[in-house]
Image (cartoon, rainbow, N blue to C red; front, side, top):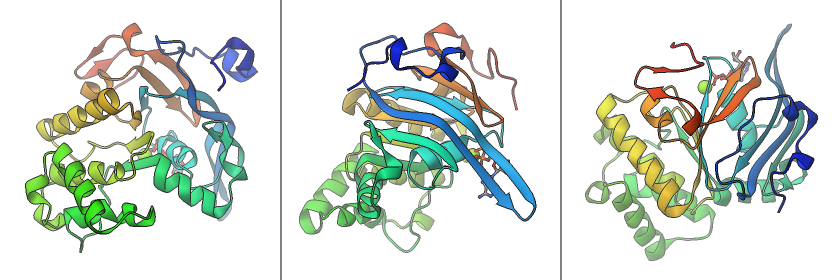
Length: 269
Ligand code: ADP
Ligand code: MG
């Protein structure tokens, strides 16, 4: 496993203000190299990512910030293997995602990465428990074992008693907690959270933050979280700013002052 030494930095990165986590011995779990993504709609081409070179570390909690349209979701889609870059590379545990077969890519998405979206994306006609166990079925776990694991995960997010509720019978916060339990169904190393509290009120948002923090601290899950929520940012190890499809800077959270409503270097939206 490569250590994050200057020798394996790209030139592009050498010019960027990139902070490494305080713990410098951490292994790289995600590495991108000159990652670019363009979308074409008719005659119009949008360059959503314009050369992203980052190294994200195993076990870190990193928040991704940037104005709407700056490329955060596109970055997540590339890193999560949900869409292919126009050019450039994504390495997960030093494996080039583009070199994976369809089966290997499906394995990666199912086992290694959990996804949490702003809109929860639960299956409406399934119960909370069924939503949580669906990805287990893809990983070959079913029956009693899936049920036990699903209930344990719902317990972890404080919803064990509501295992039989369908999404329409749950609040937004409960749905997002179910979505977190689902994201953990195959014990992933990485959680990609795209504005997970964007649709929630402050108190409910705080419950979600605490769960993410616990998963990071107690289970060592690498958390990569796009957010504008300063309380969530205040929990991060590092903060990365994306602007116009490029990394503007990455800092250790200990180097910036995060206050509710503001953070230096970022205008409020
Ligand atoms: P963010 O998540 O930071 O708001 P996005 O990654 O969603 O930003 O979008 C980055 C840019 O790419 C925006 O200009 C957006 O309109 C464009 N974009 C995103 N997805 C698509 C798509 N599927 N087709 C065309 N343009 C897209
Ligand atoms: Mg987005």
